[in-house]
Image 1 (cartoon, one colour):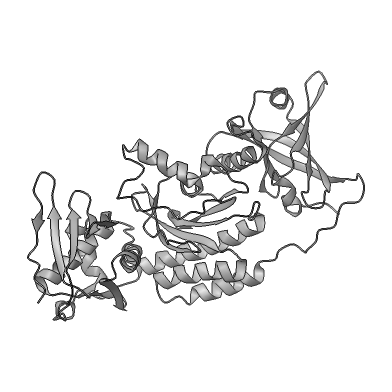
Image 2 (cartoon, one colour; image 1 turned 90 degrees about the horizontal axis):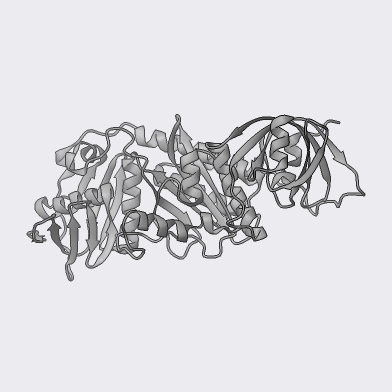
Length: 460
């Protein structure tokens, strides 16, 4: 029976180096090791082009080659007859192989030596098993995620709102797929950053933590619009280094108060980031990690891609769902009188950064929303709002398209739960919410070149 390429995908993980045999035009053969043989589809693989070697020269002169790969569990060997087609030096395939090669390099002590120059794409013309004794039988049957996927998709379809959608997704990952550390990040409409809106398994949720395209595994997946999976720890794609370099590039110190700490595992060995795409645009990224090397294989990648697509399209529908019109009678009501010491809320108008007492809370659009709410409470005794009212408010400066207002409200709601329990956002219906205030508020508005202006602080 012919051997399908997908059936030997574990042999293409790079756990055991592959061997490639090429031949020059004069018939001289050459055999060498190669770091990475990457599964592209049922008919193609990509090989890592790292050095200007004899192998590279031979392939350009004579496009036929033979590659031998080894299954890391059973020891079975497979011989692939391949034909060189092209080299990709950028794009999704290149980014995916670059991240994977970084993990291989760190595992073998070759960090700084291995550098991907290109992804050489080959057509697989035949596959044959090479018999050198009896392969070891695997301890367990291959993982089958069809059942858990069906259950997860069914649960996701019943999510009543966007916040529940994220929570159900993370619950399913933990319960049905054994993934204990994961997070969901949404894309900023401008494409300049992603921000965490939900997480599981971390000491701190990290809600509000930002990642920019190109930073770490998440940023690479967002930029290339392709899943990125690393099976071994690598400093090149670690978030401590990524955050530090990004801060330095923006002229900021690593300990800047206006940066929410990324809640990654300090001893992460395996990472996977899957872009959430809907209608061709990036909605966000689903990220998971583990302290176990090689935790995520092709099966987990396939399953997470399905879940990411379901969540992306559902999130897109929630954002586009029609909302009730602004109702001033409903939006205004007498607030109960809070008690206790006042909460000092300081806003820096330059970037809408919000500090509660002396602690940083949030910035950007979410900060502008919160300032709008607390000013309405102090000035007008308002607690009831609707989403459409915020969309129409020019002071909040929402983008014209794909403003992700619902996701920003979830972000703000969860940051308040963690950092300012005296303020709470409560959903009261479709497109409606309430600001609950448990203590008096003292507002301070700081504008560039102007002294601090303290608000009226009226709490009756």
